[in-house]
Image (cartoon, rainbow, N blue to C red; front, side, top):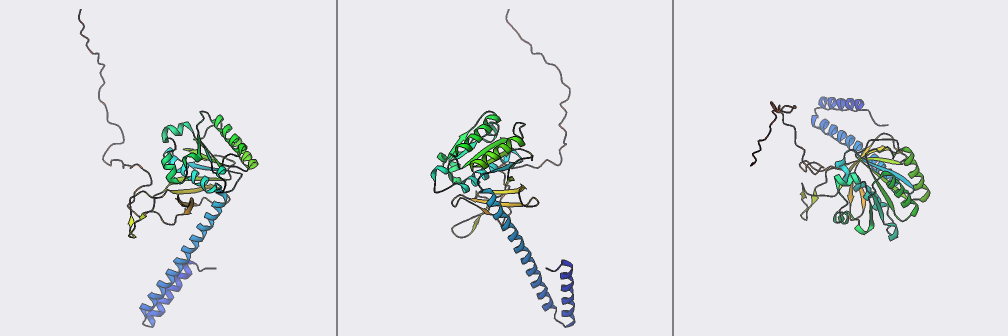
Length: 309
């Protein structure tokens, strides 16, 4: 059992007092620094082991077959991150030896498409996914999307089915989620629900992750220096909202398009690289009233029409 902080502080004070009596203040300071460094390094290593164990468990659940997983974005501006993480998980789970098991089906939501746009083929290629490997569908109703998801799972023609849902529609509740989960388990398929701009609700998903974008790391140049403020690999900040692990732990994952792997991101981008969002957020003016300015008196105005007789 490790020492408590109070016991460690008492020990440091005693060592310092003994060193002063012996006329060795430098020796006491050196011992204290060594013990402090050892204690901080042990705490850091313990935290890293916990993160690594959490990452390994998460990867096993993410890549399991016959499961229903849910990715949730709080805002519609995060739709790219939610879809990107879903595609990354689908690519990791695809069977590289069987070309027929590399096809993905994305059942998009037409409301999300109007705000966030369609999947961009050159971007998919840079992400590590060939555009011909992605089948895109966009039904008009949630009932049609649910039917298509069940039919795709039953056909066993796709490695992963991604079902995009906008918000929390009434016709996609716990009953529909349970039916999709049973279908995925019976067929051995993999279904990812991409809930865009939705709130937490009861679900039969084995795993539910809250997804947010995170700043990318600085890129290494040929001379070994770091290039800050540039475009880097996609980075995702995830919170485990529903899982077998206690609490709601957070992890930061980075996507490597060459290896097609999500790796544990240990360090955030250095300061000065900016926000993870693509648009600037301007602060409110401190000297401006929160109320709109008055428009003054409003008068009815009737234009004069001169017509020739």
